Image (cartoon, rainbow, N blue to C red; front, side, top):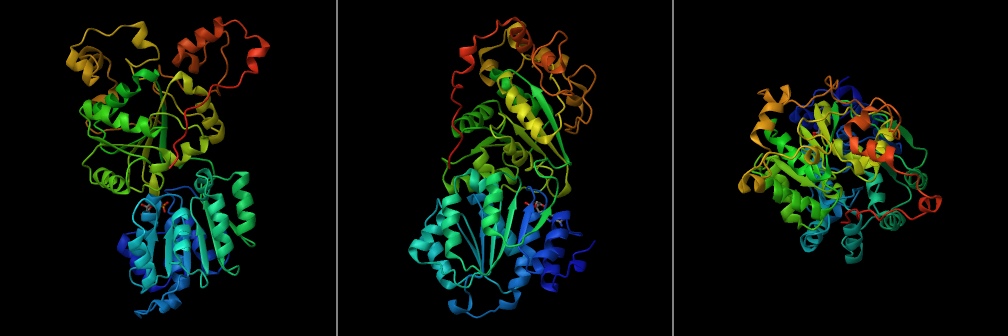
Length: 482
Ligand code: AMP
């Protein structure tokens, strides 16, 4: 199928050709004609499917009738509002609007928090047809009276699930009340909870449902693998994987801001260029970190879920879950940073015993098991069972593995000149999570083999008194707030 056959105008076809896209992705092929016809859309699409162009191209075409080169602000009222959850995604969607709209005289801008509002006000007062915004900052502009929604015809909610996760529902509800009732509304979400469905009911009129891929599943081009490892040795294993496979662009996910910052520093000490991006960093620091990573100046970008939202790097090859997310859907979002636009990607999860329940929840959601591979020298409890040979204080400080263990035990893959972390089939002797998680039984399961102390301790543990089962669960680490 070609973009021409979707009925796009020459100005857009030219911009698409400039990008080098030869054919629409499945979500584009489905969404473009439907949006062009003016329907509301509920789109099930994770990042990496090309959904941004899927809504931006037809949106530009529908507004092309208003394209004009007049200088008066009155000639450029806001016609479309695109709401997104984070600054990074806002910047990237705005860039897409500019890219695809470059041959049309339509104005667009982006507003998000964390930077001065004054230049944004000045830009808005000059007039723009397309406004990309995070909900909180858009409400600030409402207060400043720098926006007028009376001419808005199209509303897009991008990554709606994430907006709800981040607590934007009250802001979105307020904004919806300010928009003209007669409009076209498009809602995109990678996952579908009841809350999303409720929001869609309120927002959309007779929507056409479009699904890029089955929701709550990962892109098929992403190869997933779990490496069982003791929590205390995760950093060491990560450094080992990066170095021995000569990985160049690795996006690493941590659960907390503090954890992300600390890990980036530790990796630097290990001799791996790394930087962190999280909610405590200023917008400028985040932009710089992202640029350094995109330009290949740093090998590892450590990010929290919130900060990584919207990061779009063409052909990002590797994503590492240093810690599994508490919310299974976040796993899909995380690994969606790789394998984008049909390119291949690796998603590696470093999983300690304490995270087995999170892993089980993720596998349950994916309706599949993720292959497991044990890296020799990093088996669970190996640091306790086999004390490592004595190392110099310097090498301990760097976190280096002892020479002998690393050389002697390195897998075939580690010796290849080309980095390759694909594990379509787990190699012999490693563990395939071919069965869902089961508590210990007489025969050790693959899972138990990978996590032996769990198997042992479960088998030996006396049954808890019933009352203990009703104790409140231990508090979880707080998820990052932005
Ligand atoms: P998105 O899912 O919108 O974040 O897009 C993911 C990536 O796919 C981006 O890097 C786009 O530049 C790229 N992309 C979008 N549409 C196409 C297409 N038709 N062909 C090839 N790549 C595309």
